[in-house]
Image (cartoon, rainbow, N blue to C red):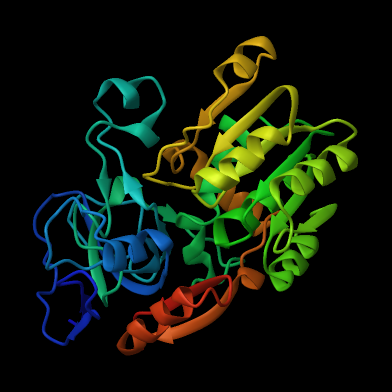
Length: 348
């Protein structure tokens, strides 16, 4: 089969026309999918450009936002049939560890991350456990639907389970990339009042379309001006803030934008330390600092229903489509900060 293979950091992926095709046998509970689309994510860019270590050493197929059609099943799989449209979660949990058993499978001790621990979705086919995939309704386009796997589900978990946004809550979103914009629309779906911040006007325009009630262009503003603008809009500070970039500077901005008793949710990843952390303020004003990683498997059916019924949308967020043979060009688009979400069409 054709696959884009990651071999070395700071090196373009290699298009391999003869990568080993997955094979299925017996009663293994597995399904082989023809991958229709796979989203291009900053996590992949971290592996490619910045040397973030993968769970399995290269050579490796990256990609973790997959949608596809069932091509083949093992003898014991009965819930799917050939041709079914399906969504593959970005991460598969073990189901047996302490965290899985208490319903926090998104922080499973033995999780399998596609495109890191095992081969991912920048290929024509993949074999996955049938128990971990979901039917994708005909109302959701199979290509754009692939971004539900991460870009939509991760913000859902951040807003609903970690941020606990309530109707009427002022909620700040710093960073309007693919994740941040989906945080905006999930806040809107929860009844909150999103305030979107970014340095790019076009991204703020999209945030408005997705439900942001206020936007702040931060390109030429310092921290004091940014925090002041948020406090003015909210009458004293936001109830919840979501940092969707992963940088100590914007993390501090998000924290300082909160009112007493406010909640900061870290959605963006950064290996850097935040040295200006005010522990006293956290204690005295009962502030909350919360991390948010991925999404629980149990939440995917609800997310799919929200997209099916247009409460959450995917089509406007996909701003670029590239065939598998042009995957390196697709990553160049991300490097330039252009577009919102780019997907790879793996059968083309």
